[in-house]
Amino acid sequence: MTKSLDTKLAAIHADPHGCKEFIIADAKDADMAFGIQAPGPTRGEKCPHPFNESEGCFQTLEDYRVQIREVIQQGLVDIVLLSASNLEQLAMQEQLFEGSPVTPAARANDTTDVWVVRGGKYPTHHPSRSFRSATLDHIKYGHLESDHSKPFIGADLGLYSITFTNDIEWDYRSLQAFHDFRIEAEQKQFRYFLEVFNPNVNAGIPDKKIAGFLNDHIIRSLAGVTQAGRPVFLKIPYNGPGPLEELVAYDPQLVVGILGGSAGTTLDAFKLIHDARKYGARVALFGRKINLSEHPLAFIQFLRLIVNGEVSPEEAVRAYHAVLQNQNIKPHRPLNRDLRTTEQALTYG
Image (cartoon, rainbow, N blue to C red; front, side, top):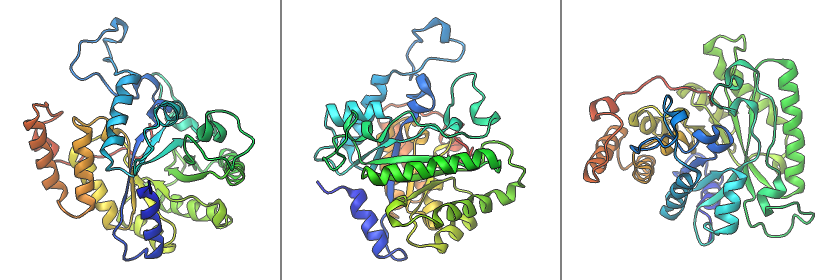
């Protein structure tokens, strides 16, 4: 089956100014960041692990996979991003992406600023350092492989992450690792999208200049990269209308997407995807906003209705609460509170 991602990317490149297509990705790779916390807290069940009672209990890996299977079956997102181990199970073993319009992808590196483990200080106390748990061979085939022209059974698309910190030593090493990854990806016929975070530590830059720092680094880093080594799209924090419009206007062929960040209210998520589309983004990759919602499938459905221009963010919140009520699902917060926006975290941790 033709994948909706490929169809939409082709349409966007053919008419970057007039195309109305919008790509939605569900980030289900949180096990490479949060560990046991990745599936989210248990939903009303009694905590089975006494040593966790002070901080609550978390759903299991199988709970996580159940939700992923449902999202793939629903078919409203264009990409499902997974860890290599979950990709092996769901794509290679269960073959859930066969005959589906959804494209599988895997997190191809896990930099230290996404090591969000309980008690850890990596995301906020140390400049981001490059690291890769997964290999491209294992993402494509599940094992080491010498012939990369063979059809893949996992995924030929991955997320590569880099965080600039204004520290010459760590930024230099991060760019060298990115350089090495691009060469390997081209040799092994592997596509990637590029995630660039705001600095995860104090970079010695005024807050109002962070967005410019990020934009300049993105363009500077890709200026020396020809088409064969370029990302299929970007994933960046939404730093406001101006910075997003600046980046989109600079190079219309560079497809820009935004990341979801922390969970927040339902209006936070719905307004974010609405505003990002309004100011030029063509992709949204939401992880915690979907996973931690009361009804992930309904949540995704309203994300799609918003980017299609069928409902406003506020209308979507009200309709989403109506779905929860009809299905006897208790909302995380009452409707009047869910219709408020909050300050959203723009770093992974």
